Length: 101
Image (tube, rainbow, N blue to C red; front, side):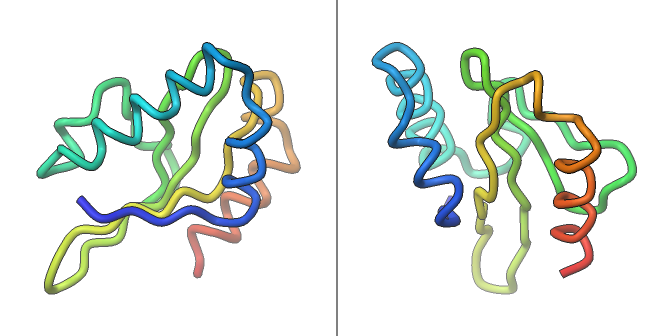
């Protein structure tokens, strides 16, 4: 699968410590090798959103949108946030804005 990162996701990825960084890189490798979203481990669709999913990466949640294009599948990672902040009101507003784009 193809994938892209938002600036926010890239910044959060660079701030990870060694173990979390290795987990994130492993997740990215798994996504690159996957041929469908169902082959990505610990990937869950968020209830109430059309194309927003989450993957647990250590103590963090990676939120991404999954767009099916005519030519290929593409995963766009938007946010990588600590689990404690993953479902607060601010993040829900951001995800609803993302889902409506």
